[in-house]
Length: 291
Image: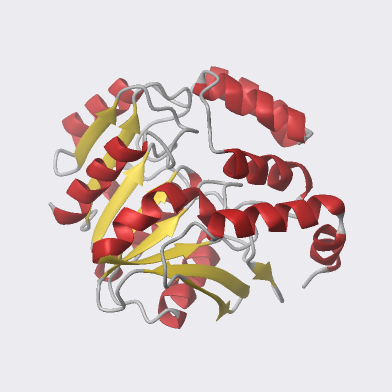
């Protein structure tokens, strides 16, 4: 563990972060397990639930959200699937980078290769949100034989660009992260929606205090690359998302890549996903994983 990580975990903020993480984890289904999966870039924290012989689904969260962002979907998903929720290495969560850092998208793909191998996963589906969706799409394009279904929740910079207004609100937070800036940013994007208190606190503490490595951001795929996508893919868009115009993204996908299924959930925003709207989103995920 790096000195920065040790300092964080010993700090009041780090202890509060750990307590909030544990409270959320404690609500996962009976039989849930956690493990550290060794990879060439460090140890990756994985939370698993559901029948060991169930169809595997890997869950990748958005930046700064941790795998606990999937808590609201974990119970229903794990009834039929083997759920494997991952804390992205180098981001907020319980994964611990070590040795040479991942430096580019190729390394990011190798990291996910190692997570799959260490978790004994063979051709799982991937359910991913935001930054996690960018990683998942890049992986599905580069490893077509290794992904069954792909379910992308409000994927930014995958099929279209981001709104200037969203970037204008995000840049101050990125340059000088703080708990208050994270609260204000989330309130702006969600329209002051009531969110889970522990998940919100994890986001605030993680953004402001958790050590992070510079994120590796896959480039938006070319049109020709997207035409080569082999995984059965569903894009679920948040109707009130401020990161992009969801209707325009849907129309662009339907026009250019008609094999990709699209769905818009009215009232949802980029940062209410993937926790809410819980029931409606759960139905959309179920449909995508079984179509």
